[in-house]
Amino acid sequence: MEPRWLDDEEQRAWRSLLDLLRHLGAGMERQLAGSGVSGADFRLLVPLSEGPPDGLRARDLGQAVGWDRSRLSHQVRRMEERGLLSRGGCSGDARGTVVTITEQGRSALAQAAPGHVEWVRSHVFDPLTPADVAVLTAIADKVVARLRDGSADSCDAEPDQSAAPAACP
Amino acid sequence: MEPRWLDDEEQRAWRSLLDLLRHLGAGMERQLAGSGVSGADFRLLVPLSEGPPDGLRARDLGQAVGWDRSRLSHQVRRMEERGLLSRGGCSGDARGTVVTITEQGRSALAQAAPGHVEWVRSHVFDPLTPADVAVLTAIADKVVARLRDGSADSCDAEPDQSAAPAACP
DNA sequence: GAAGATTGAACATTCAATCTTA
DNA sequence: TAAGATTGAATGTTCAATCTTC
Image 1 (cartoon, rainbow over the protein chains, first blue to last red):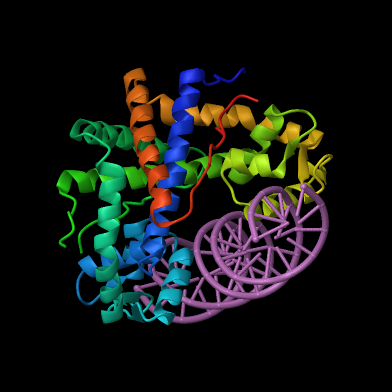
Image 2: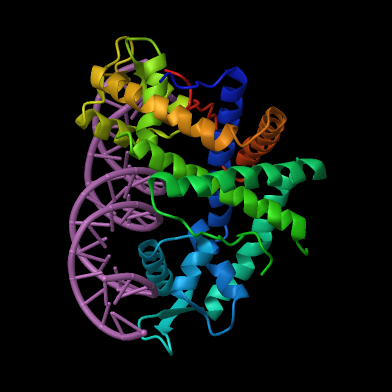
């Protein structure tokens, strides 16, 4: 069957969206790098800093950021080596691992967060009107909902209720 | 100075946008993988298939997709090893390299493109109204424009006039 | 010296076992 | 048997030289 190709306006829209994707990711990474943490570091530090002081189970942390076990394990190991967090056993379920943010981790986050929020605000929210923001949220949610459904089509399900990196710590 | 933290609605918006980012990238990659090409493969094949039959200079190809020399060089080498494209010298400038898509590359693209466009349409455009699409384009362009300016702030300039992966070949 | 391109090392991510415990 | 987690190999990306030609 002949595919339904994109017309000119749709191609423009798609290209703009891909540009947004690329620039947003790259810009965010660059800004954070200037504060000494990577995007991945930040992603983990936020939910850990907001969670209970005892730390979070690796399973829950993985769910929070939408990562699989392997990626989380590697990232946690690297961050533990750098002193940003620590791992410990899980009382009650000997299979589990509990991840805890260290003082050094809190400090790194506290140092990075203000610049990050300022960057997000000035690069994303400042150029938009409040109406833009409302519409953008609605649009993003619609597409994400469709994408979530779609994951079940040809592949496995995807829980993923990711945490918001720009939350205030 | 106390940073301007995000309010609740802004946090929701930011989180939705990040979710969109992640799901769109992952979903696209997964869909393409089912057709035997990676997102990176596809990115290069599209401008090469649309460009002159003699091929494109690596410099121009890099500009088209917004990659640096190193990343492009590695990706081109891997794709050449798989027979999707070929490299040759550049007549007129002995420093240059000319990259050409092979028949096998064209075939791989022709095989992947219909499914890709169908995926983009059904996952991105179908859930949106024409008005949504127009607004989304405008919003993305505004933010990208701001992000382009911003790149000059703390870092180097970024030309990047990337190609649109979902174009019809 | 600057531009175009390549290379190898370091780092991140994915994939396929593997291991332990529920 | 399934869930939680780790590991090592394969692949992809970034970073810092390096090399050639303009």
